[in-house]
Structure formats: C-alpha cells, structure tokens
Image 1 (cartoon, rainbow, N blue to C red):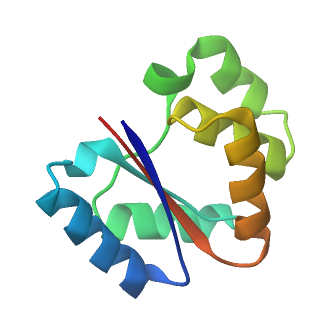
Image 2 (cartoon, rainbow, N blue to C red):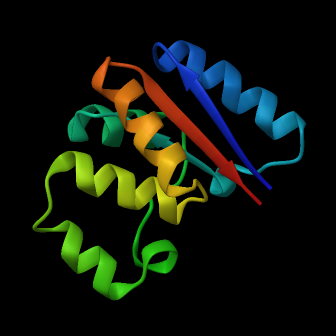
Length: 106
C-alpha cells in the first residue's frame, strides 16, 4: 500500500513520519521529496528516510534521470516510489510551491 502526504516543512514531515511509523511503516519505507535537491537530501538525511535509487527505479531510469530536468527526475522517482503517473505530476506541482511530499510504501 502506498500513502502520500504533503507538508509545508521538515517539522511537519517529522510528525508525519512518526505517525507513519506508528502505523507500521519503517524509515526504509518512507521517501521525502523536495523540489530543491539539496533541501531534499538534507531533510532525507536528517529524518533518516530512504532515497529513491537504482533498486527502486532500475539502472536505465536512474541513468536517464542524470540527464533529465529536475521535474522529470522527481516525477520518475515518485512513480518508482509507488505513485501513478498522474499522482506524480500532481505531487510535482505541490513541490513547485515549496512543499514537501512524503511517500510511504510497504
């Protein structure tokens, strides 16, 4: 089952992660996305969540993302984390507004 949450900042993200953990998700099941790559990496590291990598996307998609726009890369990674193409497009619009998107997938 895949759950998507949208939050305004890292404090709210931490609260949502704690809620997801009480629902049986582990930190390895949870991904955080931000439009700004450094912000996303910093929050992912601080809150001990997973990054979408080759194991989720596969080698070819991971390589393709190296040459894609940030929006294309984010949509691809959110799809790999469990969202549909339309859900990923909608979530990317939320990221454009400075929000954070959390995806939890068992």
